Length: 98
Image (tube, rainbow, N blue to C red):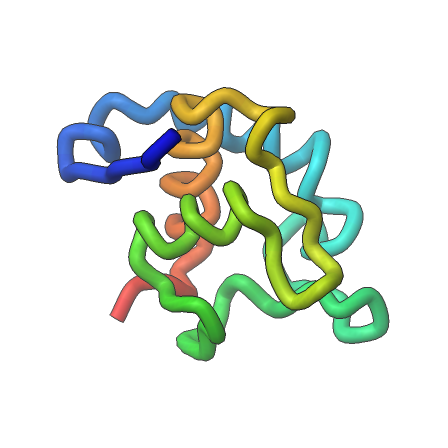
């Protein structure tokens, strides 16, 4: 399956669904506010330092495949539309915006 991201995807993304997925699956490591937890290997999502890129498509890819030997791959566990909503929500923390 190939993931793609467009500006339309940002407009169509359900931010409430993205927030719920983040709260249910990501906040335990990255924190409620996206500040991360170095002890767990979870980076701060609110800074301009993004190892794998800070564009929405980059975030979506990282969620899909996992990262750094710490973050699990969510492909097969989350639907692509859910991953897109999550990517838009996470991008909104501000770290991905240049």
